[in-house]
Image (cartoon, rainbow, N blue to C red):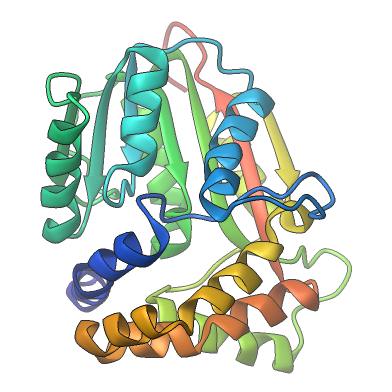
Length: 286
């Protein structure tokens, strides 16, 4: 990961995480509005429902030792640790997020079960075969080397363990390549949200298969989560949110003003919400 990208991502989340928590809560990810996106529900409930729907889809019944890659302020990590009475480790590039996640763990009496640290997902500070669940919810889009990222997730996964990755993708390009207009739309999203690039779900599936992940499954839940951006846009322009934006600095303001880029990306079928899960085989690592 280049020093420049690392710094951009770190500074973006250092600056915006406090405001996000204040206005939108601890979960820094999409919500789930039913398979066809028509269910009306509280936004925070939709975010919790997304976690539960992912667990159901990936058939996670129990787990003891979880790694949350791109943990934010510990939303998923703490939820999963409490749900499964498990240990959870979260990594982020943002010292502000890691510190807040530790505070929140203490508030929920989960400090002994959880650990949060600043670490690069492309060079994780963990031994091989360390975790029985590696969870990455909307962090893959930030990775400048998708293959290296998935290799690292695979490396730290225990034999028999499960990888669940949920990430922003662009539409599959097997039938038609991205148009110039689509590429320009993506470029604007990359610039605002500190993304090097995104790839399609079939490309992620190919990487997973090449790594040797077994029982690989994918799903496109774009329809189920698309309403989320309308909800965020509506709540971004309350007096409280606008005041918070002005306090948070320019990158956060640009991010808020650009929320429509994501909404339009979903509307035109360019942005896709991709899920992938797979298991690490027992015995010799592939």
